Image (tube, rainbow, N blue to C red; front, side, top):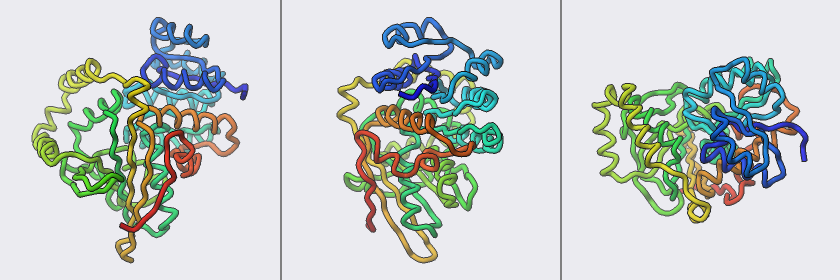
Length: 355
């Protein structure tokens, strides 16, 4: 087993604990970290692993702790608040950074830090879970089928409910609006503004564009200047979503955000192993060159989002343990190749067609 050191920050959370248990089962001995020693103790005792409590506000201690770590897996959200100090600390400490976010702002921030990370000789690779490994790898594979593409559309249809972190990210977007990439720039649109019918892999479904992380990452992976991401949604629910547009000013106020996120904390819990085993996700992508009238479709099936996040995070972590390349910001597909998703348990091969 590789002697290099791994740290999982936020290991006491639901997904962080899943990653820690899976890492230990593979023979790794990650350092468990987070804000609270008391919350870390039960898992550390269960897995017989060392634990360290350190606040993200304590920059000096955080950097000192990270100097002995080769790869960090950051699992403590909300990443809109926690990613910046951890990114900065990893650059200062010379530690490879990865996280499980799907937040567009985090991808944009990591991309902006590319030169600093490269100078430090470390990799910044946010989004090493369900957000965004499957869609990012599909985007890269589709580009391989059509290098001259002008438009990329991605989407997924899942049996599993939103994770607590993704639900909170969705709440943050309520006060902002939807997002697409148009002519290379991120464009804010109304909620429910763009709809279409998509066969994600199990029949046609009405779908709505959402501000998913691939609006940033798929652009960094492929360079395609027009990108949209969709999920299935009933027309009735889409209508309710559109009605929220008139209240966006209210939905972005601090007290409403806090109230809605509090409801998520009370009501959203992770599924048990048996429930996760029964859940799958259908991932779909369309690539086009409108000038030439060319179009290709790509599809794959993955396990549920939690299991993809666990297996994907460990796959990227193990890749980084042996990494000898240049530093900088990378998407998962740019770092590990589009075949990364096909190697994850529960994932099918990417298949192409012209529908």
